Image (cartoon, rainbow, N blue to C red; front, side):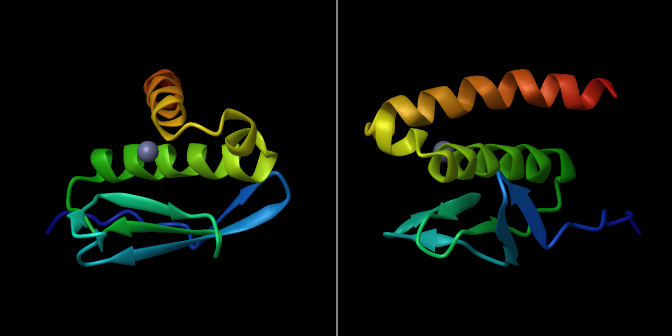
Length: 101
Ligand SMILES: [Zn+2]
């Protein structure tokens, strides 16, 4: 049996505690997603994937959305497409750095 990595329940972001929930299936606005950050409840929901690498990447991606929200940068950017592009670039760079450790 594959070893299932323990997942954190909380990720601290700039002094805020972001909750992490693993869900079997994540559907928001009729769209199936791998992850989502809810800025109202400060909760990251992740689909409970078997691919750990993909799950790590998704957690990193949603954490970056949380960083932009908590820091107020999401409000400054005020453009979902721009925010998404920024998060994707940062995710790629940080994921590579993280994997090297
Ligand atoms: Zn995103």
